[in-house]
Length: 436
Image 1 (cartoon, rainbow, N blue to C red):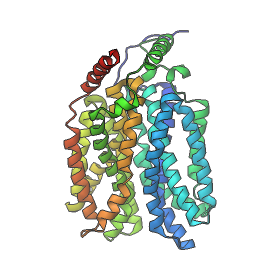
Image 2: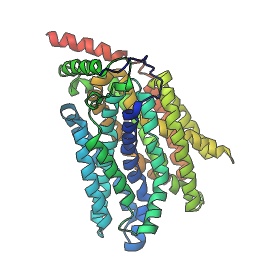
Image 3: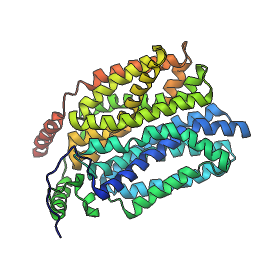
Image 4: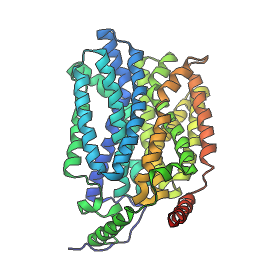
């Protein structure tokens, strides 16, 4: 039976029952890999204390994992063009669970290092390279709202994971300290197996929960669009030959480096200033909670002003936040943490939202599959950037000055792309090329 039509409001958070369930899954897909990315700064201390393993060597494996992420992203992006992103996600989560089991039972530093690197690569590809494709399919017009909501899981994970793994270690012991992440991964896997589909129409759900059309109309429109998508002019080669793609990717890579750098070593940075680990952890948690709010807030800014304006705002407040963190006295430190948190929360939203805005639902994966690996190449150096800048006079203050410079440069570079009109211009050029 056809549903009654209702006027569509792109700014409404009425996602419908199925839409909210999907949002829970999407949030888990961001939350879990981020937890594993940030938990190592605590886990390595346990391994160092018990086995005498090299803590710095283990932390460096996250950078190796970042490089593997990029290699994997190129492969996953290609698969996503031809295969089901949902099925790819299922495989990635299964591999993720196997790696969690291995790192839990490992008593060998080499095996542990391999697991750390592979967990980073597999988790990031699930989090950033398959999950956003499915999100863009389910919410092509409400993408800003939805991304702002579900990416709350990223800063929340960064802030909570050190407390989660410490509590699990104290209650369950070293071997079982990853159990909370295993449980969450199993829940996400069940969502993938029994509820999540590549296209919302396959779950009898209208994209964006748009009730202005019937389910039958939505399914027919999707069928026609999928047929047209098979003849899309946006090949991988053509995407990479488009200069604006590189400008967007390089500029957005700066934001990922910022977000990864500022959060991954915040505890170490505050401890370097003389804070005890518990106080440093609380400041990081505060930043993460600010980032949760910032993710939601920047999602609304994205939806109302568009992703381009929202991205420009985060460059500015990100640089200002670092400046306050370095030089502001007293309570202004928390203003800096709020601005940093808002930038971290917003940065995770924008690459997917921008691609969906410029290329549309059906060409999204073609552009995103090329842009996101470039972003991740730059983001992979976040830990190394922070650590090596901290070796210079000034310690981690120098690292934060480096981030300010990067954000200013990123703003200038990104602003050279005025809007998404280059997509239509390039498609006209492709049409002329295909006539020859």
